[in-house]
Image (cartoon, rainbow, N blue to C red):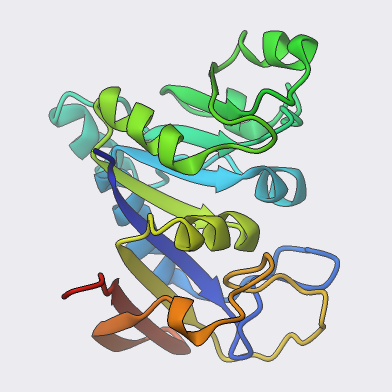
Length: 228
């Protein structure tokens, strides 16, 4: 068993998540920010990859006081469990995700991670070892389910999202497409990684909904399963 996995991203009209220097760009506006904050508040956990932590230093906290209050009323922590997929335990010990806001943190690493780095991070987060050279995402999600996590929001980056799609672990994709072109062959996209070379392996999506939002459009897709 595993949690329901909802990938949420904002990208430019040409599919870029940020610049070629991986500098964070404001792609969407206030309406989308509020939507994302609600998804986060209603999720049991939110996950990012180590690349996102090193580039953007996000806190992944719920911003709206009203949504924080709703979580408290449900008996939850102010913020969902915050998870970093970090095979070699490279998360800085002063990262915002480890210090800002109340709630549980998890660092998921592999056997390749140095013991000293894992020990240092264990002062601020629960360290889960899953996989030999890189994090085994299927195993990680199974362990998260055993911890009571049923809904998991994934906010990036492209390498982690690709790995989740490749492993067949994504259920829903919401994608805000902004009104800009960023360009750059090295700029991160919705899914990086090596990509599929055989059409039979492509991930197929069913369009669930779309709506105009801010200066762009929000697309909602559900992942098709074989035999459905």
